Length: 196
Length: 144
Image 1: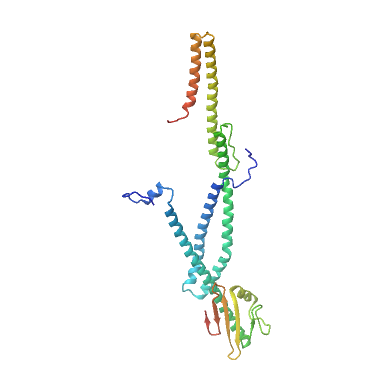
Image 2 (image 1 turned 135 degrees about the horizontal axis):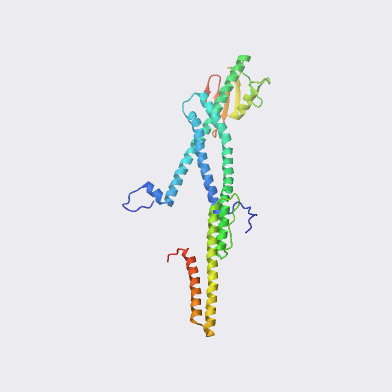
């Protein structure tokens, strides 16, 4: 996995689009409320019976705000929309990396370790997943070792039977070794609570 | 909203139990939101138009005051006004430069007609609103 050259800030399109749209929607809602709060007093002054001088002042302020506030609101929405891509990338980037690592695990590669960048979020989750992968790796190693031992015992047993040299003692010794391996597998399996 | 028959309607229960919305709920919410936004937008735009008319009326009222001052100084109203640089027929300034600029900002167009027979003038200005509201001013009458 190329860790240092991750420069795509729109890595999880579906997740990030949802996040950006949510941010823009929230900004639009806040802008809408802000506009109502800012403009309402002036519009009310114009529509009700106030002295003409007051109406003229309100009208001037209203037009001044109308001319200046929209570019700022538009700019703010664009700016925060763009910022939300970077912010969501802090989550989407690690998610992308975790997904890729889990894909590798699914395909049988248990040597993967999720490495996140200094400023990335979800480090805690990545650590837990790394622990889980390490546990599975230990389990698989235990199984593999015991499988090798069991295969060896079976080969010994077959050889001794074929050579007709199987004594009660050697037979008991092989059974003891098999039971030891079985115990190891049992201990490893006890960790996993599977209800069938 | 799907609800079993005979089951009491509890809003908090619905909020707690269900996280999704049906298409009818979504359509209703969007429809209400659209209506609310359209009403707010129409109020806002009518407010802006009203503001443009008020600003134009204020500019014309100030213009009338300037013309009255001019008349007191010169014993007559100017025969004509060039609104490009705000000077009269003798190239004398009728109003200040700043007011001249303000007129251009506040009004869509303006015309000045002086009647030498009754020594009265008629100022006709158009506001910058979407109907270009006409404002007519004589030394005595101010009409919109």
